Image (tube, rainbow, N blue to C red; front, side):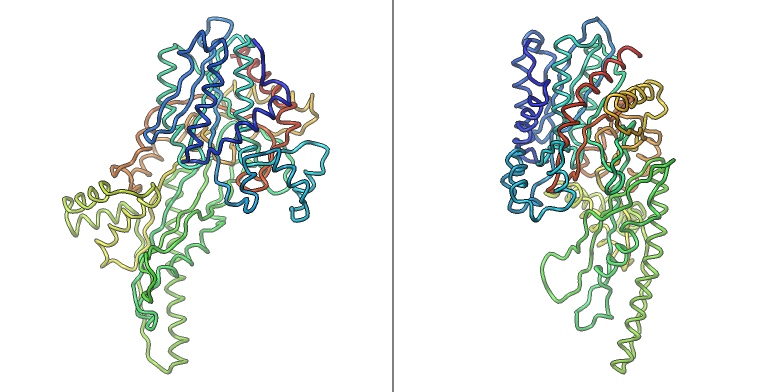
Length: 544
């Protein structure tokens, strides 16, 4: 069998070919790239002889995931899963360079020729003796997919005794719908082929823990993530009478000040610290312009976790809401007093902002209108749904708030998809041994400084295959506070299917994921890392 994904040059060419597929989450390229990989693998003699080992499985929206099983030299159940995602984020941030975002060699050359406006660290890499390749997906994570295809090729050539299961999924950058679907698919393959999954290897790129971080990392797990939303429901008024109402945008502004980068929601485990929360959605819900103040507004926050439970996070969020309530009420009172002095008028303002969570608001709506009426409205909204998960979650909460408008002004906490469990295999003996072996190999052969840490801080699909210690408790809290539960949810049912495999992330070096300066260190990623991955696989099979 002729091998074509083994040399540095071959791997670069393979990566560039994958990057040229504009596989932005939710767009046609996600399907096209899976079909491309399937066609390429079908041409190998192994899959011509065993076509049943190469298959795709379709998601409800038409996107596909791909699995490719290669059995080892010996008749064994031992199987390593190689997991990667094929989708990327959009390219609007590339500006005038959008046309080159999916052409790494051309983009890199263009940046080299027009380097005057580049940030200093990018210039340093362009002038570095090591080779860097720019482009959307070069780092996150088509380099990882390229490396896994290289390992599959080695497996077909009889490199190892054990089995390799390649798993390529879409949608990691949005809802992880591909990986959630894959839990069922992989379990079916496991049962049908009588496999034992001994390790899952992901190859997401190394993420810096802080700017200018030069440390190299191996990860034995992945951070968890929740997406709490806050519906601010004020009191409408005309702009000529501002103190007769409460602007939902003002409520949101104070909430954002207290939540954005909040130290209260950072979590430290050992030496690892979660990145602080940051807003991913922030807007009022007024559809048309008028001089009436916005009645409702919404903000959603990315909150990362390790050992904390969702319930603990909810408790902290309620405390921040209480602080925000006092600040808003104080702000209104203070500004009304200033205006009264200037206008020589008598202004009386008194707002008592109610603080609720979704479940409490739902129960209040049922108390006022009856369960039948609330269910009827829910069903009507589900049947007419056109929005994505985030916007539809907001709509469901907003509808309940309208039913309970006598409670206004109010601030309502709820949760939206996606949810990523925090997982870690740091105490698993095999994962520890593999991590130590790889670390020693990298230090000995490449003179690299390598550190093994528990949590990959970029969020990854490992959350749905690794070992989660808080699964039931977290799901119970989410189900209680998540509007999509029993209202057209699609992803929640997949969380209940169990697929737990010890996991490790051994990935390439890159910089600036999700930025227009995204780039891959080719010398390490395609020069040294293929050997490191191959040795990690060999060590795993020999020591399990």
